[in-house]
Length: 329
Image 1 (tube, rainbow, N blue to C red):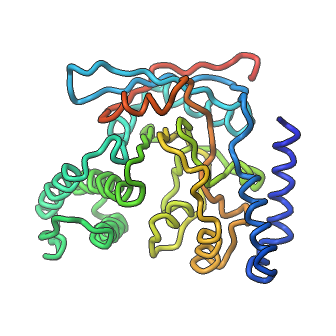
Image 2: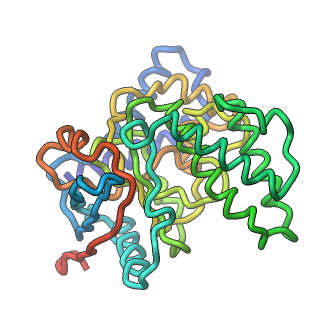
């Protein structure tokens, strides 16, 4: 297994240093071969995985009659994942709370109609603190274009340092969360994901070699590191086709995402490569772009697909326990 992973790293190094500016220069068949080679190199690690520790979560529901559900994840035994687990345990032991008691995305957890109604109410609250354009006040359907206008409004507000202590900040936090919920629904349909971010999260450095850990491939039942960087990550900017320039992840942080969907065979590599060349004047092969997410571990459950049905509609999450495997540390 280590030999295969080392070969994959070697392939990505060769692509980074030798071919990162060559897509479109070679015949199309050779371009296709390079993209397929890249896709092979970013596939999930072969099973069985070796774990350095475990995290146990508990999901709760708005309906009191629905019993909480426990989820247990194994964290992969590799240097970056071990470093992340130490950060996560630091925040957990410090008694920090998860932002919004966890942030829930996708139709597995979110009702689009309710999210839009919530955004209408938040915009109304915001109008008490600042004048808003009529097109925002009257919005009800919240297309991607309308959501982008709200994003720009939030960014302009955040830049006004003299107003950072205003009550509007809390409203903007909720608006931002709801915007992302609706964007996720627009982009990914029936999928579901949960963000777990401690406030404030502990952070650590990312090196050039850590670029090997990023992959655009997502697995059902996977746990991935949170982006934790101001801006829009490359892969999210691609899926949402946003206008602003993406920002590669700059550091590791204690936050994580729990994914309840697969994106293993549905990556449009030609489109992704073309988008990065056109929008970013770069390439998919450049490790510095950190395209995708860092895979931290996997759900320890016999049937993740069946579990999806049980957790539908969950609205809160908390961390129950963090354990280290003494042999890994």
